Structures are given as structure tokens and as C-alpha cells.
View 1 (cartoon, rainbow, N blue to C red):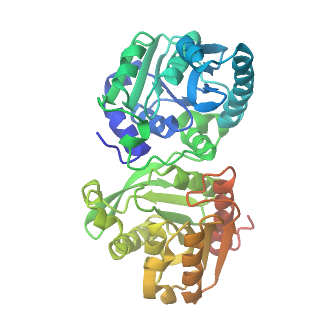
View 2: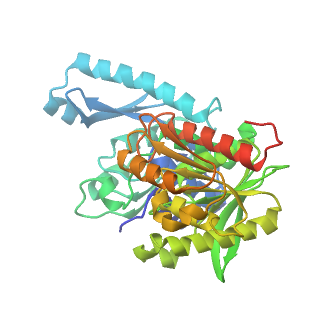
View 3: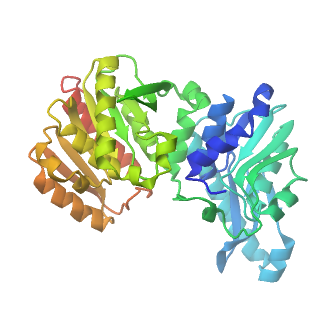
Length: 432
């Protein structure tokens, strides 16, 4: 079984966990990659979402080889066999554990942003990761959960090594795993997109969960909507903060979806600034199977234009477009239409060059944001900028790569987008 990305894996995994709905479960994601999967599970089970923070203990001269793991509450799982075979000395073990303990505490505090851990006493707890290779980290997480008072522990993963699943059954009450391929070498080989999940994405997903919103007073819950785009029904998540003065529609890039953690992170920042957001799938699940559709900029632009008109009727406020990767080309092509109704455009790591001759017809103020280490895309954005005949700006974020996974990079994208949309869509608002 091959998953498109962690969002796809989470949605499929949630389908196998429906029997837990009457138990009123708590869902815990293993940072970082397990949290996007857990977010989808929590959404389907209408359950609160939290993290369960554990740290792998790596052999000093071969850190990718783990000899154990530690978790919150002082739980530690050590493989005596690996310690013995790798020749790990006692002083090395203590040094690694001391450093990882400090990092564990730092991450737990950063992810929750001051929120307390969710109480687990007497609860059914679902521990979720994006996959399991050796199982040491999952074992530590499940033991931590048990030590914190959970009455029923479920380990849920999309894919795992058959041997690891067999070993873990003694540590939990239930294991739910969608795929246990016999030829298993790494979790990432079972995903088309296994790009790194950033700390910022983890924080954003936790804040967007019902428990996170309740404790922080954050963004309002998203309303699931259906958008009619030329007779095709598209799924979307609409957030309209009270008194919103403008809305931004998101066009994701190839291989992504409206559940993209990066776009959701930016959307949350915009919501905090009083801007509404519409995260939208421009293709139906059936259409996504044909990869040619993902790069059909004309088709995507037409869908985005229809969604913009739908949004203007629904919200009756100015509308902007935020495009990532190929979605940026769709946003610019849609904005070039004389009746587009688009008041501003922001491109994140975009391919505006794919909009071709339509660039010259764009009249909406356009901000192009590119990572400083994304050299090929920088050149493409400079060429596209030269073809624009509207107010425009190219901002390069130093040290950032194409997906803006570096610490603080995505936060900077959100700040720039917020300032651009606020200035051009709500000029009299006084924010930003």
C-alpha cells in the first residue's frame, strides 16, 4: 500500500478506527511526522489532539542507529543487544540521554505553547505515528501513556515492519496497522511525499485541533464546504473570523491538498490577523489519480476562478489568492481574467513562470516569496517578475529551501503574506 502523503495516510487510518468513536478517545501524535497523521485521525474521531514526546537515543558515532528511547515522565527503553553490539560505553549512554532529555523538555513546551498535557487517566488513548521501523520510539510512547493512567492504549500507524508490530503487541491493548509489507526497509518508501514535517507545522496542527482552540482562544473552527466549480463539486475548509474584512483562497501545489500543513500554518496566521481563509482541493479524488491534471494550469486556474466567484457571493468581501508551487501559476492565471475579482496575490515557492503570457494581464498586487537556497526557483521567479505589469515584489528568505522547512522560515512566509493581504485587501483596517 502506497500513501500519497501523511494527510492521505491519516484519512485512511481514521477509516480503520471508527470503532473507537463511542469510547471518547484522546489522540496523541508522535512528533514530528506522526502529528499530521494524528490530526486526521482526531478530526474523524472528533477527539482532542495532543503530542506524546519521546526522543531516540542514537549511538554516538552512528546517530541513525538507535539503542533506545526516552519519553515524558522519566520512561526509558534501552536495547541491551544494540548497546552491547555497538560497544556503547556507560558514560556515552548517560551523555546521550542527558542531551536528549533536555531536548525532550524543550520540544514538549514548544509544541504545546504553554498548554498543559491532556489528562489521560481512565481514557482510551490512540498513539499515532506515520510508520514504524524498529518500534523503539513507539514502545516508549505507549509506555509513557500507560504510566500516565490510560485505561486502553491503541497504537495506530499506516505502515510498519511485520516484526515491529509483533513485538509491540505486548505493550498495547490494540494495534491498528493498515499495511505490514514483508519487504520493509524504511517508512518513507511507502509514501510518495515523505517530506520533513517542521516544528511550526506541529504547533499549527495542535492549535487548530478543538482542544488547542479551546485552550488558546485561537482561530475559529473551519466549516467544511462544497464549492461548485463549473458543475464539479470541490471540497473546502472555510474559516471566517468574526468581522472579517477579506478572505484568501489557497491553491496548493502538485502532490499536496487542502490539508497541507504548510498552507494550514499560513492560514492560521492570516486568521489571527482577521482574514478569512478557504483551503480548497482544486481536483476531485478521482481526478488526482491522473497526474496530468495536477499540472494542467488552465484547468486549475478555471476552478480557482469559479471558487473565487463563489467566495465573493458567500462572504461579500475582497478576495485574495495564495498559491504554492504550481498553485501559484493557477492563482496568477486566474487573476489575469478581467472579471477575476482578485484583490491581491501571494506566491510561496511558486512557479509563476507556468502562467506564461497571462502574467502580463495580472493587475492584482503580487508578492513572490522564495527560499534563498531554492536557486532554480529564484531565477524562475525573477523572470516571471519581469513579465508582470502590476505592483509586485520579490522577497527572498535567506537560508530557506523550497518547502520552507527550516526553523522560522514558514513563520516569515506567514508574516509577509499577512502584511501583503492586509495592506491590499483591508487598507483601512490599520493592522499589520
